[in-house]
Image (tube, rainbow, N blue to C red; front, side, top):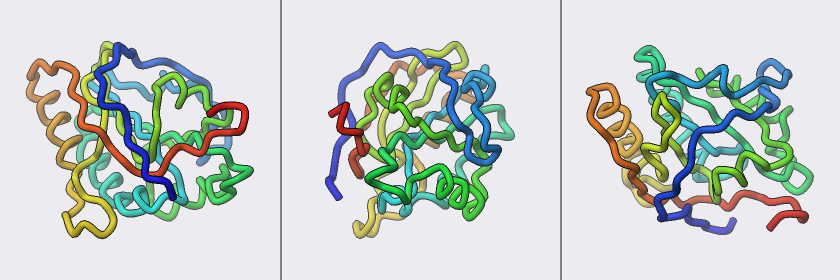
Length: 188
């Protein structure tokens, strides 16, 4: 496990549509059909990462708290499954059902989505406005395996609460760290 940090730069990035395998249905779907006109949370996660395993239940709680309020959540796994078979679509589907993810879980086989967003680690979060501009990039909260800080989702939760209150949000970056995205040999 290599601890990797997400970028601490504010990037000019817009939400973008991709056509990816959604593992619960086994079908390719366009991401745009899951975007919200209020806010969309895009999470780069995977199955094997201990940092993601540490927060899995909070991802479910967070999504269950905000999906009824019109905010959408999408999870994306971009890892190389030849080197990390635990992250295969078959195993993603198992994790999807095990935790009862209330959001779609997509497989980024070509890694084009991770490259577009410049995602570096799992977990890593991007929150976009309903118009597609970036509100937030970074961590879920300060909790990590072994640091004894409770998993609350506070960083993401606070942004989403402010979105719902109509507060104008300028892009905020609070770097995440976790496992590096497992790039295929053709991209490093």
